[in-house]
Structures are given as C-alpha cells and as structure tokens.
Length: 207
Image 1 (tube, rainbow, N blue to C red):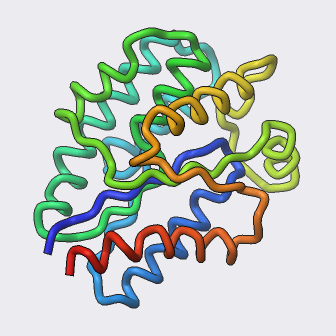
Image 2: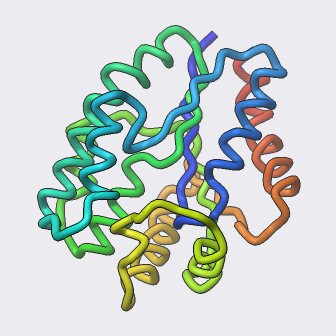
C-alpha cells in the first residue's frame, strides 16, 4: 500500500485544523495509518522555528523569515513526512510549501520562494492540496472572535491578506490536477463530505 500526502492551505481562520482532524478520523475509520502534522511545528525543531517566525515580537527580515520556513520544511520532510509515506501512511498536513509561496512570495514580495522550498524538500509535492478559500474580511472577523496567541503574519495589514489570497487562487489555477478549491464559508460537515468525495477515488484506486 502506497502512502498519500494530503495538505490543507488557506488563510488563518479558514478551518484547516478542523478539516484536518475530521479527515484523519475518517481515514482511520477506513483502516489507514494517518500521520497528522503541520508547518511550522511538526517536529521539536519545528516548534522552536514556529516560535521564532510567528510568535516572536519584533522585526524579522523577510528573507530570513523565508529561510527559516525552508529550514523547518527540509527537516520536517526528511525526518517525518517521507518516512511516513515510505511505510504507506497517509500524511495529513496543515500548510506546506504553498503557504510560503503565498505568504513570503506574494505577501512579502520575494522571488525564488517556490524554488527554495522545492530544493529544501527534494521536490516533494502533495498528491492533493485542499485550498479552503476565505475572503480576508471574514478571516479577520473569525480570528477576532477567538482567543489566540499573537501571530506576526496575522497582524499584517494593508493589501497583504489580499495578495496572499490572490496568490493561492493563482497557484490552484496553475495546478488544477493537485488543488481542490473549496468555499471555507460552507458548514464544516459539507466541507468534510466534499473532501472525502475527492479522496475516495484515490484511496480505492490504490486498493
């Protein structure tokens, strides 16, 4: 049985963590080994990098930020993701390299972010990426209604959130065979059903 690499992308507040958990529960019910993880923070090293790039107050140079994310990704893929895939597990991950392309590439207006991430991961791309699309105003409203830890990227104003969303949609349009774009304002149960429907063909095709 071959492994399957599934990622969730989208702005903060779009429901990625909720849908990751629902998907993992469904997959485990089918008898699959599931590894749930996130970037940054999926390893001990990743937890430290997550604090540096997201929760540390004060300025971090954009290129340094991009390199820290790439360092986390390289370690995460080498020590957790690839070993899980090689033993046939399904990896369900909250954020991957598309986040860097959207946030550091488009949001920070840096070039070469995708190439850096592909080098860091030795070219590993997900089998399926679910983009939970949410407009910035709704995202801010959801985040404002919740208790949360300070996050440097969430605090970015101006047209930063709009650039990030536009880049996500552009990435999805460029790779329709990998991306599935879903309306993040739909009820969680409807989103979960759509995700399961998309994955059923892949899972049963394997068997």
